[in-house]
Every structure is written in structure tokens, then in C-alpha cells.
Length: 328
Figure (cartoon, rainbow, N blue to C red):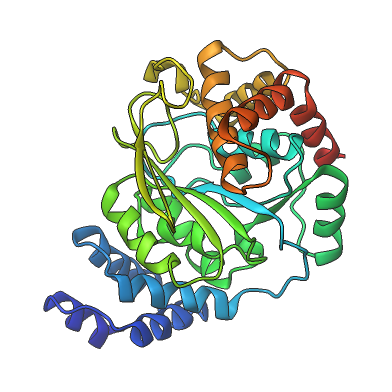
């Protein structure tokens, strides 16, 4: 590691194969905590390159625990996190609304490292027990239309650096890897990113995959459709910018997206929204994200049709039913 660090400190970057090799060795615990912290710190001081991100991703996928879950028609709705906005768990709630509308969801998530409450935190708080067998996950997908993959169960590198990331409390390149390494490789993905530079990296990387990706970025820095500003949406067909009005909503005040200060508060917000007790602005953000996700699959009609389906899923408590089935 000393040679690698010296190489990086001299303003060099890693090739794809070098990045892959280093990540595999990190997962194998070949370096001590100080060495790994120094390695991570390099990427806090400069931007990650496409080859480095690709190499890290390939290492994660190579080492991932194999799973046999039918994700050929499933979607993952996930953000990088690390946008510093302290929003409630929008992508997690959206996942249940999409599942309630009839689209299978294979949600990949983790504990929050640079945020207070990640998807794993909030679901665990609600009583969900993480699962690591194909049979259990497939059963959840069939009965609830959604399954949840707790990332450290399937990625050795995340187990190796979990406590270190939490102690740092900073956004690191590991934030960028989560949306790229869902172990069941769903056909569709809706990925939220916190800046346009990361969006471009993802676009280059995902163009070569035989999957249907969509990258979303709120132009004021949210890693989801926040309705606080215009949203940029990138797919294989290109990029478009949508106003809140284009999506069928009024603008949202950022204060109405707050997650609270504790995991318990975040879990309470999640359940209250799915129970039909969310505020108008909370509901709007969730429905907008769900409608865009449904429309992305090209299976549910035009955007207006998908908007109605998302509203029905939330307000008729179909999404709540999916949550309850998952928690059984």
C-alpha cells in the first residue's frame, strides 16, 4: 500500500486493473485501518476517474456473494447519498410505492455513513431482519413485490471498511459504488446522484451495460427528484431537464423534506407517509419519483398514466401493504 499511496500522492491515477486489484486486497483485509484511511483520503482531495470507478465496481461484482433472484423485470431505486441534505428516505419510500403499483423492486441499500439514516437503518428500525439467502429474498419479492438487499451481506469490501466509513462520517467513493453493484443485477435502475460530474461518470460507465438505466439529479444538489428545483434525467437516449411543473407538481420547500434527527424519527416519517398521513409536499416528492421510475420501465403507459398509478399505490395503501408483507 505504501507504494500505491506514494504513486497517488504524486498526482497519478490508477488504471482499471490497478483499481480492481487494490479493492480486492482491501476486501481481503491486507491493509491496516490507517493505510485504508489514507487511500480513501486521496479521493476526498481529487475526483475519481472513470477507470478507477470502473475498476472498483468490477472488484465488487467479482467478489459479490452469488445470488439466484429473478431480477430480469425488476428495478432498483437508489441514490448515492452524501448530498448533505438530510432528507427523509425518499428512495426507500418510493420503492414501496413502485412495488405497490405492480413493478418488482430489488432494493439495494446500506447503513448511512455520511448521512444519519440509510435505508438499512430505517428498515431495521421498523423490525426488518436482513436476509442473505436467494430463497428468502425471492420469497419476499414474490409475496411483497419487493426485496431488500443489505449491501454488507453481499460485498466483503463493505464489511472491511464499514466502521471506518462511519467514523470518518464523510462522503467517499464508496457512496458511488452502491448504486452500481446490486448483486442481483436488476434490468432497470433509477440512480440519484448529487452532482453532474458524477452523473457523467455513471453515464459513461452504464452505457456499455445491457441494462436500462436512468440517472436523476436535482439541479440544486439533491440525489433524487426533490421538486425543490429543476431535475436533470439521463438515460441511454440522452439527457433532459424537467421543471417541477413538467412533472405535474408545485415547487417544494426544502424544509419539508427533513428526515428528523434520529433513525426513529425517520422510520416514523416513512410509516406515516405510507399510511396516508404525509404532508402534501412529502407525498408529491414520493409520487414524482415513483411515477418517473414506473415510466422508465416502458410498461405502464405514458407519464400521466404512471402518475395516476403512483398516486393510487400511495393513497389506496397498496404501498403500505407491500411494507407490511416485507416485515412479516
